[in-house]
Image 1 (tube, rainbow, N blue to C red):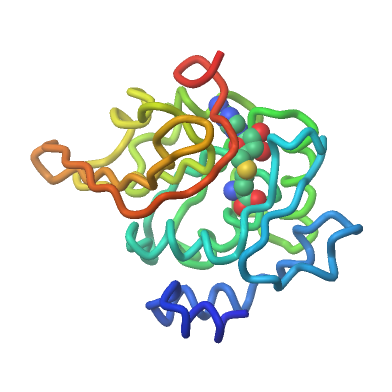
Image 2: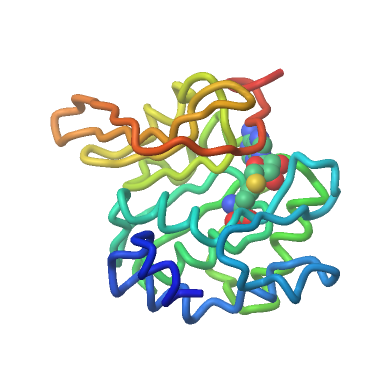
Length: 211
Ligand code: SAH
């Protein structure tokens, strides 16, 4: 899978290749889909199986993490824990000195993601059950913020909880047309946005998302 994602131009950095080789993706898949754990371009449903919760396709993690340039020591916030797979990769990228906080709004999904992370001993990841559109003030500011669900705009609290400098990435748009958007904040607090790709993600619900 990693070789393929490199060849196809998704993975550029050695750090991400190493992380994706190390994290056992099958540990984050529901039992009935385990045989597809290394299918590079497919997302799969996860509890509670309503269609609004998925483990994202493997190629999308480099799509998000390469432009963010996640590095050892970074403090990261992930909105939408889902399976926990993305959080495990982030923890590998930030290393022992770094910090990963991951928020999941759905209780059943939260239980699934948290258990997966614990089973594979990613116990350093702080998994929180709550509305990630409000960010997570107790650990703000964050060097990097990843939002793995889509809405028409980037929630204001997330922009505010981004460090100077800092980078945030999120699918922005409507339900069937979204643009992966990279927001960069410089050391003076100036912000610029860049559109990278078109993607398809589940809806971001909450106070600063869909009601
Ligand atoms: N990163 C995940 C994929 C998550 S799918 C992985 O690697 O497996 C997106 C998730 O975002 C869904 O589980 C959904 O419940 C969650 N979500 C939607 N709105 C949210 C919000 N306001 N706060 C936290 N999680 C949210």
